[in-house]
Image (cartoon, rainbow, N blue to C red; front, side, top):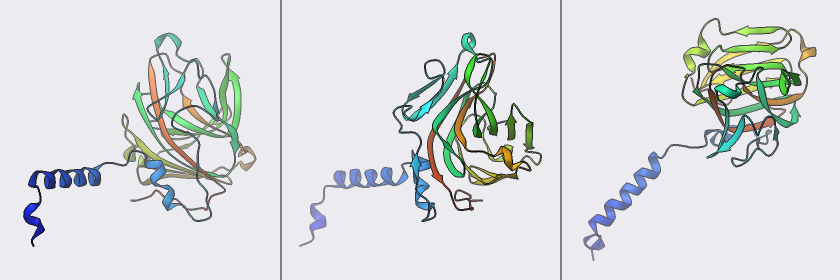
Length: 238
């Protein structure tokens, strides 16, 4: 008997369409999808549970919140921070790999990931930061906050070309010893070693909301971290 004669053509079409939709559905948590690429020696930890700011501290009543699996950093005209403020991990990290996505929603001001430093009080905000900063999605490069200022610039424009200004940027930061490497959207864009390794100390990881005078908003998601990683990038595709 040819069973295919009795297959409902409408049902078949629905099954095929459902399969196609599943196949075409984009990966919503890119950071988690990169875990399978990690070296066997590395154990992934999620810094963000997707629902709360558990494990973080900062101006959570004023500037930082969570919605739909995203950490939102936001101010309006009336409460713009006079000094850059940071949502920081409660735990300190020294050698690590961080995989995450970030998006600048409102304003043209850059943001960044702070590392190898500590919280300091500036303009009556106890959650400013002294230490290294990996900047995006403009003014790309590295900064040494409240010490040496700019320490590495995107002079060849590689980071600017790889990044996008008002959409999600997929990034990897590999910080080992005195060396910081940065990947944006599959392209290695920066590799710099600090000539002052004594300034590369364990510290909290911070998400920056830059000082400003206008409304601004940034989104962060993913935030997968490994400690004591192998010295090789895993998200480079080009």
